[in-house]
Length: 203
Image 1 (cartoon, rainbow, N blue to C red):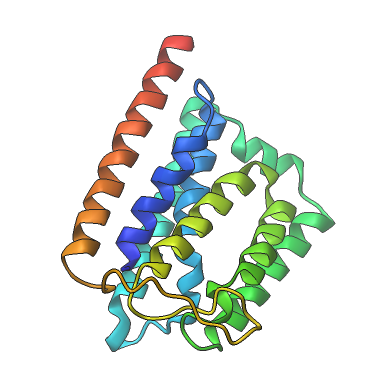
Image 2: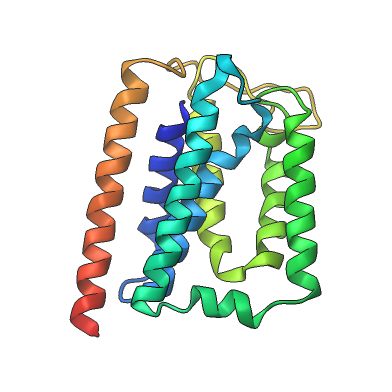
């Protein structure tokens, strides 16, 4: 699937498990779900042939910035959590996340970063950086792997084993991708509106 589809489904999956009435969970779900939904594709070099990857990364940055602005507006507490947990663990998490991203960028597409091992490693890095993001990041990452398993191109889900997995149901581009992206974004908007309405009523 394409980057926008992974972002949309990642956020929808994350918001689906977010508890109601929690501004922090709402912000964490949007940030974690969007980043988790697209990070597995760090193994795609954003060249002229892969503009989609670059566009996806720009969208995630914009979403993250908007989410943290909302965090301050709603006084959700995610920014306060990060500030309150500045230290060795956070730095170690950032270094590990950067190292995994660097490693992914130097591996074949749909290999290391599209594996359960990589998902576990990235999740551990996120745990060190900001624990409230972890379940939502994990949901976003898992949604990416599930979507890519449906593609006709194999992924090495059980890396470092050479076993490749594919249900061969659809292509990365095409009508299916467009439909899934629209459904993902629509679900995200509906869930977010529902969560925010509940938050407003509870405040």
